[in-house]
Image (cartoon, rainbow, N blue to C red; front, side, top):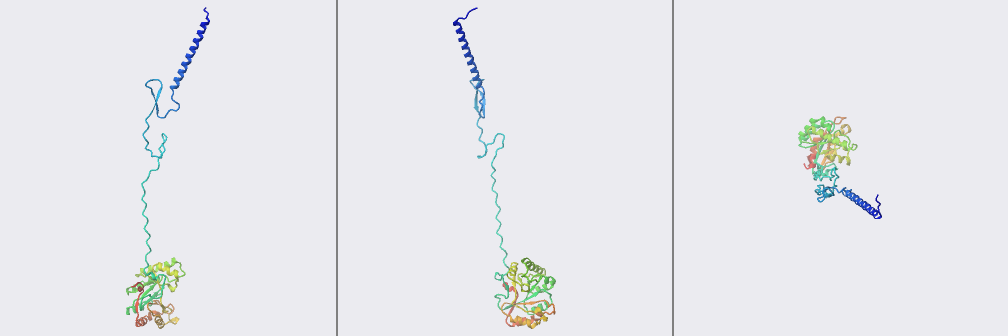
Length: 325
């Protein structure tokens, strides 16, 4: 058996150390090679691994895909995540045409009478000159109508007849006779109530109800209205004005409606008319008979009244003189 000398022992130690270094170097080389073959932990989006030309099977090289074409999403819109629908701002709609502004409300129709007559209950015909208007109220019966129409016709005198709606409904033939003779018809309410105690709604019913009844009988009463009993105030005058009527009162009431039972006679009636004679005088008479004694004093006195007024140089007109007619 050979004995290893001191020099031989040193060679063995040196060789072992060299071999150890060689194995360590090989291990390091393998470790480095393994790390280079793994992709980075944060791989860039869009990068691809492709073999290197100089090292076909070794280290991969990184190459980025071309940048995508610019998005058509409008500026200000967030780029969506993959698989999500883009959020776009609302589309801009074409302007909606605005409706035409409404036409200005038409002004109320003008009064069918001069504005100077509004707010008044006339007691004379203003500016009419030497003329008289004979007016006849009809609210009860028609007992005096034949005499009245006869006297007016005989003297070619026109008259104005204030009819209630009830009278027109009860006496449509009488309305026809008045119109056929060329006289003027006017409005005296539907049922002849006092007006100052009525609300505006009932005033309208009274005035317009009478208007319709008279129209149905063949005459047009507008635009003249007489208050029943002469009862009126500023409110009721305004109410009838707003319904298209001018209020007409009288200069003198003959009081013939009181009848002989109250001490009235045809002479009394005539004297009252002549006592009030003036330019534009409006005379109030009645068609119906007194309910107590059946007298028709106004109808009986009418021929003498016409004669006496004519003798004083006065003519006769209807209320159309208020409108210039």
